[in-house]
Amino acid sequence: MNKASGNAGFSLIELLVVLVILGLIAGLVVPNVLERGEDAKVRAAEAEVQRLSMAVDEYYLDNGRPPRELRQLLERPSDARNWNGPYIKESNLKDPWDQAYEYRYPGENRSYDIWSYGADSSPGGEGGNADINNWD
Image (cartoon, rainbow, N blue to C red):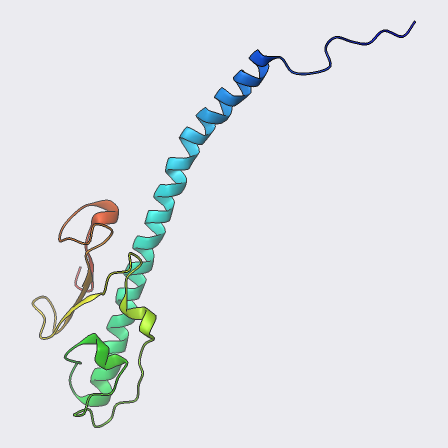
């Protein structure tokens, strides 16, 4: 006697339980993953501000003064006698949120100031929205 079993699949209740569990896991994991992505952008901006600062310092050593604008790290100004650039790539001029890095010479906090306004592109803020600069 060969009897087919009536328990050959999953019940609707079992499938719903699995979907609820997957939903809970996704609800816990996805926000953490998104937050880590924002943290990575903040760390990248911090590193890029330091890289830009080093490029400005190198320009200063070559020319006796910092550039008037960051673009002079890419394109030789007419009054730069010992320009040995380009000191950076075009892509280094934008932060991870696709906004141009801010630059001020002479600076208010250092001889020159470089900063990004962070994810919100406006002054101040906390976390991913905090400003990132070369003087703190």
